[in-house]
Image (cartoon, rainbow, N blue to C red):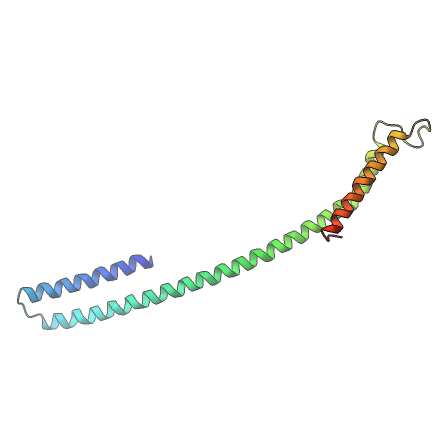
Length: 145
C-alpha cells in the first residue's frame, strides 16, 4: 500500500514536470499555472517525505511487535514445559501402583497362591524395580526431582 502511494506521488511529480516543460516548449505563458504547479510539487514532495518517514516508523513498530510476540511465545513455552514436567511427575508417582496391579494380573504364580515356584514372579518384580530405579536416577540427573 505504501509503495503504491509512493509510486503514485512520483508519477504525479513526473506529470507536473511534463506539463511545465510542454508549456515552456510551446511558448505559452503559464505564470499562474507554473506557480500552482510549483505549489503542488512542493505539497507532493512533502507527502512523499512524510510517507518515507511513516514507512520507517511502521518498520520499527513491526520489529517491536515481533519482539513482544517472541517474548510471549517464550513465556508460553516455559509454562507449557512446567506443566508437562508436573504431568510427568504425576505419571511417575502413579507408576508403582500400576506396576503392582499389573504384576498380580500376570499368568505366573504369585505369593499367597502357591509357595512351590515363585522364581518368575520375583524375577519380574526385580526387573521392574531395576527399571524404576533407573527412571528415578535419570529424572534426578535431569533435575526434575
